[in-house]
Every structure is written in structure tokens, then in C-alpha cells.
Length: 239
Ligand SMILES: NC(=O)c1ccc[n+]([C@@H]2O[C@H](COP(=O)([O-])OP(=O)(O)OC[C@H]3O[C@@H](n4cnc5c(N)ncnc54)[C@H](OP(=O)(O)O)[C@@H]3O)[C@@H](O)[C@H]2O)c1
Image (tube, rainbow, N blue to C red; front, side, top):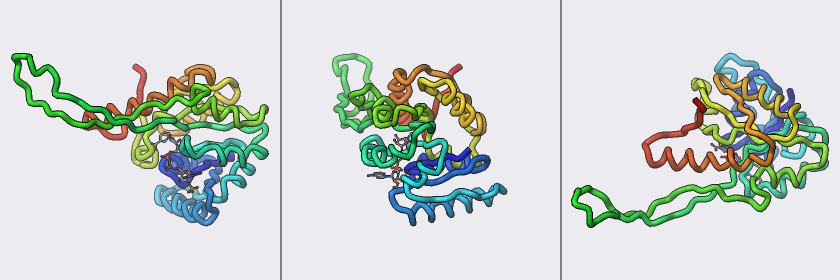
């Protein structure tokens, strides 16, 4: 399959390119053609080291979207608008995959609390950072993206809970479950296949696009749990 990764020069784009570049034709999209070409060459070098044919190419986001059958939107939520508007005329009858998580960092005050209790504990006051899901007007990033698509493009939301670093590390077996949302069973099945293409990942049907907020909001949860419990780049498995 021909897969364009818009924002493919970024953190999560790299992992998709390296994983799917082993069996699909990958086109890295960027705002900057030369940057895309340089990054594609870098990804090809990595794949060659692992004994794979290196055929990843790089171009501008518009051309990438125009050339591909499947378009992965791997850009931050706040930066989406102009890119989606630019590619809109070129994505009719195509499958769009949103991995976008609208989230923001907040700060709150944590007090030592319970000073009156008789059990003495060591605790301090501090300002604590945490991430939270920043719900867009439509309910989720996927539903916002849906509004920016032509009627005959099919949107699937997936991969929100995959940590970029581990995805890009080809030594890592990713024993993760991937929630997939969308309103077209055909497009969801294509995405299930792309999930299955990545080591031990398992696709799970979460429901229609209206359920996308549920999987998008798992990402800030994972980041908060990791930060507070000396864990790194964690993901999800349903057991
Ligand atoms: N990082 C993760 O672990 C992870 C996991 C799951 C989902 N996600 C989601 O994936 C998306 C990308 O995350 P990321 O961490 O990969 O982001 P990132 O590395 O910060 O950015 C991705 C790419 O966006 C492009 N970009 C930067 N500013 C832009 C602008 N103003 N307009 C258009 N494009 C711009 C850049 O490409 P060019 O400079 O080449 O144009 C950049 O390489 C986000 O929506 C995030 O929520 C991330």
C-alpha cells in the first residue's frame, strides 16, 4: 500500500515509517521538501541496517497526500488546520488515519495534607504538572478532522497510545493493544491490517468515530501514570 505520513519527520512519524517501510511504500510529508528528503534518506539508512529494502521517499505534505492511498495525520492538534485545508482537494476516496491527541499541560498545587493524623509521614508541598485531554468542540480531534474532509474520504482514529520512542526502536516487540474507531468497516479493516503489520500489536475495534474521545484521552492518562511511577513510554494491553 502507498502510505503518506503527514508530519512524517516528527516523533511518531518516524516509527510508522520504520515499521511500515519494511512492507509498504512510505511517503514522508513535510512543510519542507528538502527536510522530507533528508529524513527519508535517514530512515532508509536505518532500514538498510536491519536488512530491509529502503524505498521511503520524502516530499511536501500536499504531494504526499496526492500520491498515497492512505494518509496518516501525524501533526499536533493545534497545527492541523492549514495542512488539512491544503490537502483536502487531493484526498477524495482515500483513507485518513488520525493519531492526533488534543492535550495540554496543566499545573496544580499538591499539599502534604492530613497534618492532623497521628501517623507521621514524610511529605512535601509542591507544584505538580499533569497532562489532560483538551476536548475539541466536536468531541475529539478525529471528529474535528472529519469536518475538514471531503464526504468520500474515510477517517479512522487509531495508534494514540503508542509511544513514539518505542515505535521507532526496531529492537522492541510492541505487545500493545490498539484501539481503532471509525464509521467504515472497510477502512477499519485496512487499519487492523496495518496494526497487525507491527510486531505484536493487536487491533481492537472500539466503535464508531463518536468513541474517538475515549481513546484519545488515554494518552494523557498514560503520560501522567508514567511520570509519577518511574515508568517510561508505557502503552496499553487489555487482559
Ligand atoms: N509522540 C508520541 O509518542 C505520540 C503518540 C501517539 C500520538 N501522537 C500524536 O501524533 C501527532 C504528532 O506527534 P509528534 O510527537 O510526532 O509531533 P512532533 O514531532 O512535534 O511534530 C510532528 C511534525 O509536525 C510538523 N509540524 C510542526 N509544526 C507544524 C506546523 N505549524 N504546521 C504543520 N506541521 C507542523 C513537523 O514536520 P515538518 O517540520 O517536517 O513539517 C513535525 O516533524 C500529535 O497529534 C500527537 O498527539 C504522538
